[in-house]
Image 1 (cartoon, rainbow, N blue to C red):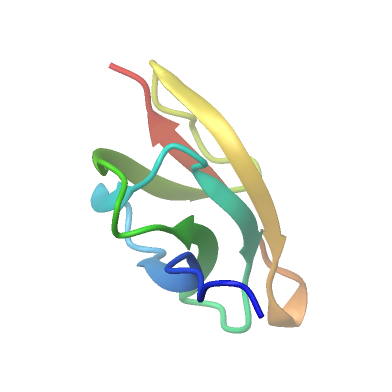
Image 2: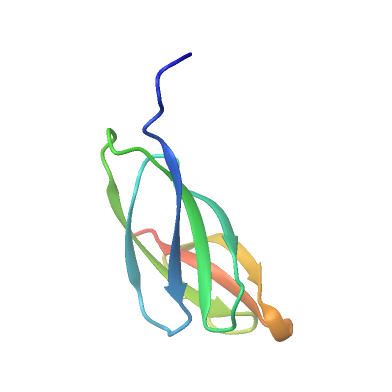
Length: 92
């Protein structure tokens, strides 16, 4: 048998609240975006405690809402009841 990997896939929630939220992520960044509720977006990313983490800022906007300047689209999540959220990362 091989060695046990320290890498894990972890999950975070980012509230839908028009605020910026910081996550400390490794070099792989976010792997998946989804929503099981109307008030938060969930993100999954590979976490390796041996690697340097980078603080990154994210916000969530709804379809048709203004997109802040200097952001990049990370993913879209279809929430219950027909809401659609878009995860944006601050690229400043």
